[in-house]
Structures are given as C-alpha cells and as structure tokens.
Length: 417
Length: 93
Ligand code: HEM
Ligand code: SF4
Image (cartoon, rainbow over all chains, first blue to last red; front, side):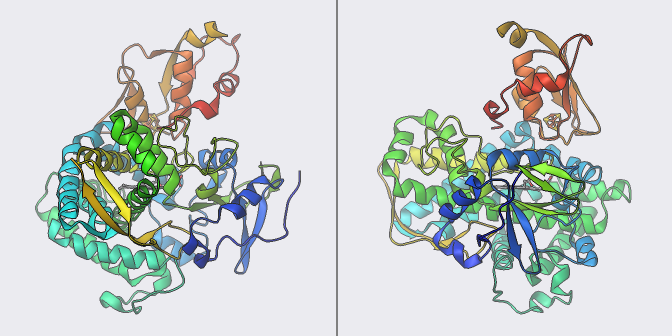
C-alpha cells in the first residue's frame, strides 16, 4: 500500500481546461502507485483516475455516498445541502424512490419512441445550417437539439427553448470562476450558496419549473412534468415541492448541457479526422461504434465526487470514513489499461466501455439512451446529406473543471448529396 | 469451461434495489419486463438464461438488482461466478 502526496497535480484549475483535457497530468496520476491526494481549498480529495477504481466507486453506493457530501468538488454547509439536494445527490432508499419516478420515460424501450421527434428536430436544424453554408455549430445545432428534445418530453412550449438555453449557459458559468450576472438577476433573493451552481439562473429555472408544474396540475397532459406533479399529488411525501423543483432543474440541465457538449466535440472530431467521417459515410453500420467513440472522446462530464461512509481500501490506498473521493471520467476514458490507443479517435472502436455516463451503479446517467439516440440520429442525418464540416477557427472552450464544454466553434458546412 | 458458461440458470430481480433503468429488458426482452406502474423489473417467462448471458446481465444492471439463483449449495458461490465473467468485457452499451 502506498500513497503519493507530492507533487500535487493541479487538475482543478478551470483555466487549465481552456486547452482541453490535461491528458499528461492524468496519465501521471493514473500511473502512480495508489491514489493521489489533491489539495483543494481548505480540504482536499483523493483522485480516482483509473478505469477499474472508478468502476468500484460507482458500483458501491453504500461505501461511496452521493448524499453525505453531495457530488460536487466543493463542500457545502448543511442547509445548502438540504436546499439543493436532488436525485443525483441522494442515496438509497431516497434515491431509488426518486429515480423510479422518472425512470420509466428513460428506459431504452421507451426512449426509442422518441426517435421520430429527435429526427424531425435534427433534420430541421441541419437543413437550416446547410442552407447558411457556415456558422457556429454549437449555436446552430448542438445547443438547440438536446434542449428542444428534453423540453418536448417535459411538455414545455418550444417558444421557451431560447430562454432555457440562456439559463443553462449561465449555470455552466457557475462551475467556473466567474459569473457574468449579478446575484439578484432574474429577481433572485435566495443566497447563492443555496442554489445549484451558485447561480441566480437556478432561481429562474426553479420559478419556471413551478410555473409549468402549476399549469399541469390544473390541466394534465401526456408529458413528463405532468407525471412528476401527479407523483407529488398522489402522496404528499413521495415527491416534495423541493424535490420536484430540483428534479425539473436537473432534467433541464443534465439533458441539455451534456448532450450539447458531446455533439459539439463529435462535430469537431469529425471535422478534424475526415478519414474517420469517411468510414461512417462508407458504412452506415459504423454509426453505433462512432456514437460510443464520440461519447468517450468528448467526456462531457469530467468528474463526479463521492464521500466514504466506512473505511475502505481503494486502488492500493487505505481510506477512512468521511473522505472525499473524486472520480475523473476524463482520465478513466483514456486509461491505457482498458483502451487500445486511447488518444486515437477511432469510429470503429469495438471494445469501448467508456464511463462518460458514469462508471455504472445506481446513479448511472438517466438520459444515457436519449443522449445516444441524439448522437446516432445526428450522424445518420449528416451521413444522409453527405455533410462535410470544415473548421474555420479554434473552438472556444468553457473554463470549467466539471463540464468539458464548448462555447462556440465556427465551421463551414457543405452537403454533397 | 464452456459447459459452465452454457448451463441454464435462473435469474431474479431484487425489487428493493431495482431503479428501473431497463437495461435488462433491452438485453433480454423475453426474460425481463419493466412494469409501467411500479417501474420495477419483473422476471417473465421461465427466467432461465445461459450462465454467460446471465453473468453479463448481472454485471450490466446499474443497481446490482439482478442475481443468479444458484441451484444447490454445492455449486460455486455466486460471487465466484461473477468474478469469472470477465467484468471488463461486459460492455454496458
Ligand atoms: C452525452 C450526454 C450525457 C452525459 C455525458 C451525461 C453524463 C452523466 C453522468 C456522468 C452522470 C453521473 C453518473 C454517476 O454519478 O455515476 C449523469 C447522471 C444523470 N444524468 Fe446524464 N448525461 C448525459 C445526458 C443526459 C440526458 C439527455 C439526461 C436527460 C434527461 C440526463 C440526466 C441525468 C440524470 C437525471 C442523472 C442523475 C441520475 C441519478 O443520480 O440517478 N443526462 N449523467
Ligand atoms: S437493469 Fe437492473 S435496475 Fe434496470 S430495470 Fe433491470 S433490474 Fe432494474
């Protein structure tokens, strides 16, 4: 058993990610003995960087709690934890109860029913993009696609999509160092530390969720918001008001920012590796493996945190109860023990057990099959148009150690069909 | 040990643990069904699968709700059977 404490590899500095994932640093950490300790503000955490260790932590929600210290890098005070808690920050049995309330809509079988919706939206966006001939792929395709899909599922009118995209952009800022909006934006009066992502945009999203929840309570529809508010009505303590708000917030944010990031990195990778795009054009059966490779390559969520509830041995290091461990999916997805040539973008990769949706376990991404569907349909429709993307500039990245976000990337687009 | 891998085994779902992710249903529609009301997976049909397939599904279930019902105590314990399943090969996708 050994523990490496020096030198502290700084992987939390948001500005580091302006140049992309710091692969060399992660490789060093992965290949050191045991787990590496990382200082962070007044505390610190264990860096879980290897694929196998991420899997162990993910699958054992009892020893590695999501509820105790929640899933963010930073620690929160008790009142903030309670105010912000949602599905992703709970343990069984609360987690099981909340998860089942939304799980039905997201099973692979039920997600398949949304394929034509996803396709219609994709076609509309791609045709408009091709007609323009060039533009920012994020703004034209990657951002509107997932938000329009999740809003359709929730039952939110499409006219409000623009507003919710804007709110989501502000939330992402909250994971970096700067906020471009004042604490009282959107009429917020709640202390920021009680709000998800410390952002006043969360207040606006809560308000919006409540407004539409009220509408559906009065006039139920066949949509996700209705099923959430009905679960709330059925039995007072099944879904509390705060749980509803946080769940609405989580669905809008998680279904949106992450998929956008995956689609954006996918487009960049295909533009930068035309020979890989040609393989997809030549063989439509390649869409499935290409989808998984884009998900691995993009790793939209860079990490998630857990807190130990009991002493445990992990990756050759002894941990006490109450210790913070942070799983770096960005590292696990490039672990040379699992992936052949991890730094090669290979749309035909068959052994690809990536952890972009988490390392398995109860918190496994609820929207994984929806996100896969969106990536796959985008590839199919791009291939149907024999679309070629050429980069006109460098992508502008989000300075964040949490989302591997792309703010914008200018491209020329040509359909050769 | 291909005999052991192709042997038929009975699978079961722990209702307390199931989170309704539906991965079992996607992989084996004839054996698992996620109930629309409870959002809990049920075993349908005979509930029998080849051991290698059962191992894959046990491994894929995100909440470790599925297990193999061992026929007799003389057989290797479930834990060993899972270790042999080659966890890394079980592609959750
Ligand atoms: C490419 C797109 C996406 C990526 C990379 C992604 C990634 C993740 C990750 C890493 C987790 C945490 C897993 C863990 O802690 O073990 C997660 C959880 C979650 N995701 Fe996604 N996600 C994506 C799309 C979506 C979509 C489309 C939705 C849809 C609504 C969604 C909803 C959720 C929810 C609700 C959780 C919390 C689940 C729980 O705690 O039980 N995600 N996602
Ligand atoms: S895969 Fe596991 S959690 Fe998902 S429905 Fe089947 S038994 Fe339940």
